[in-house]
Each structure stands twice: as structure tokens, then as C-alpha cells.
Length: 268
Image (cartoon, rainbow, N blue to C red; front, side, top):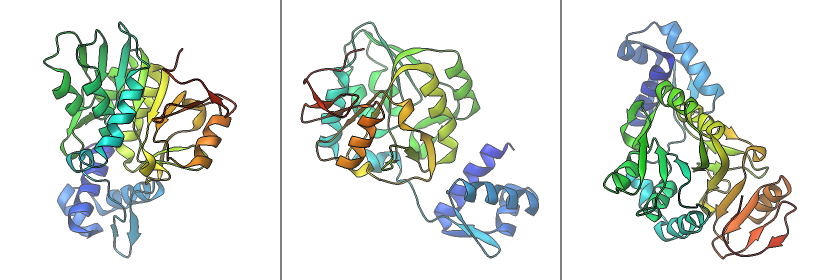
């Protein structure tokens, strides 16, 4: 079994049981205790678990997709509507595995676009729409996150290019670093960033600072943030000063120096 698969199974075991010993994990995964110890060291370094005497425990858990999808739906829809204004017919977009990104997919129904995604909820949303050219990335099915992930998704992304990437996050730190709680999801998201001309982060106010110990990217890799009007002001200012256009659902955007600019869609 590849290390990526072991890491996923270790985290799943810890989240379901609360804690597990090295011996228990070794038996469950049918690998040596030494291999488990190396895995635990790596996962702890990535901030995904805490090692305790003889084993490990997960202190932070990302909610399953269906649970997260039902939270702050109105705010997510407002962000999605604002994001949809940026896209012109005929363009190509990458949509990642986030729940706010799924709400954006609903806004794209009936439009002549190419949509590239690893988000199974986005796939379900658009599969019957004959106007949308839909590309589903390959990979392992992560049921609790309703996504496809792993090296196959990364390899697929190296073969494509898009006008836009719309991505979510578990947290945004005060300095503008975009964070995730799951180490296995980060490589594919970084590959998405490399494949998109413009990178747009969709994040409601709960993501400031939110959760996550694994860095997806820094502010220098973002072009636009779309968020609530009530999002953390200091972080939004820091992002603006780093060159990120901050667009609020109240209709105002900040230019690259942090000042106010016109309402309306973001232009290229």
C-alpha cells in the first residue's frame, strides 16, 4: 500500500475511534510497527494528529461534505453568485472539492462553459446540462468528502489548463496563508493552482482563521478572494496589500493596494 493510502486509513481510524496504538494500526493496515511510526511522524509534522505514548490521536476533524454543505447556505450562495459574475461564456473553469464551490456550480447551469472538477457533487449538479462541457478528474473516491483525489487526479491536472480556478479552504490565516486540514487533499489543490490562469478563493467569514494546519498556498498565488462583507478585516487588508483583489458580497472590491474600487465583476 502506498504511503498516501496508509495515511488516509490511519486518519480515518483515529477519527472513528478517537485514538489508536501503533500495534493496533500495524495490525489493521498489515504493515510493520516501524512503518506506522514513520507515518505518524509525518502526519504529526503536517499537523493532522498528535502522537501520544504508544499511538496517536486526532484532535481536529473536518466535517463530512454533506454536513458542511448544509451550513451557512445563504452566505455560500451569495459568494457563489458573486463568483459566477467573473466568468464569461466560452471560458474554462476548475472547481475544487469545497462546498461553496459546489454552490457555484449551481450558478453555472445553462452556460456554455468547460468545467473541470474532482467534486462529485459538482458532477451531479452539471451532468445533465448539455450546455456544459464537463471533465471529471480521475482518482480515488473519498466518500466523506465527495471527491476524487490522489496521484491520478494530480496527473490529470498536469494535462489541462483553465481560465479560472475556484477553490475553497478550511482556513485563512491572518497573513493570508490558505490552509487545509487534510494533507492528502493538498497536492491536488496545488496542481489545480498550477493549471489555472486566475485563482479565486471562495471563503465565508467562518474561514477566518478557520481550521487547518497544512498550507495550500500563500497570498502570492491568489488573484481574487470572494467573501462575506463581515469577513476578518485585517486579513482582507493583508491580502489586498499582497496583490489579491478582495471582493465582498456587499458589492465592493479592494484593488491591489487595498483601496476601494468599482462594483461589478472582476475583469482579467
